[in-house]
Length: 92
Image (tube, rainbow, N blue to C red; front, side, top):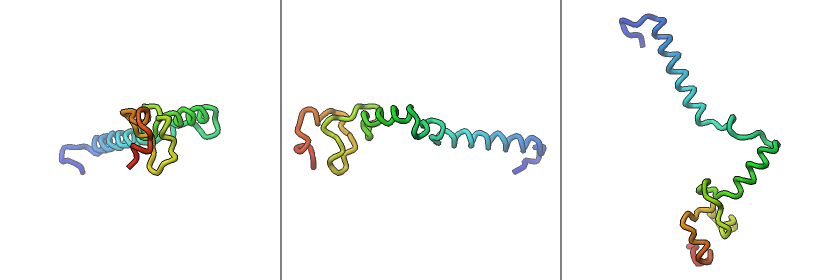
């Protein structure tokens, strides 16, 4: 609201600044500008790269034994247990 010493112009300026800051913050959470358009060569390349990385920990490579064939398998093995032990012994 208006404070007794605020002019209407100052109040409008303050409101504009707050709305611009909120819009900029909300834009940070959208992906429309970040993802390539479907059907483009870049989209196909990005899809291949995403398949190579783990869905659970995207900056780590997907372990070879975790191919998604088991229920709940999202490629989470940051310590590399699937490289040392058979996957059926690690399953609960």
